Length: 170
Image (tube, rainbow, N blue to C red; front, side):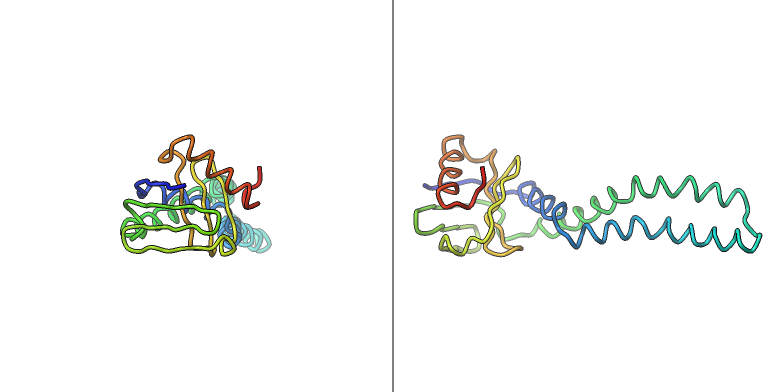
């Protein structure tokens, strides 16, 4: 089977979005950063209350701002991370015409700057999202196959091959 498609920034951004939303370190960082600010303000208010210097306007501001921070900061942090990823992807050598040849023994991936051949045993993980399939030989080295750029018959055949190799769960 041979797949030909033009890989663009949006396809790479789908990978980065998937990676960010499933990355344990990013989840920990997002949780920590979301909780640190309300916690610091809470400690500050506690000490002001203990010393009798608590001003009602400051307390009210902290009580109103903390839930807003918890609601909106995680989305902003994710958007910022995706924005940084987009600026790095725009000069990626994998963008452009991609050709993937899949046989029972190997996968050959040709893109504008290089050509790589993988044995099936080197594919460590396969992830199917709503828009793509990612074949991983390492955590940061995906072969991205966008669903919208591959016709339905080829997509079905690809999924059948991955199911035969027991790489894709139904």
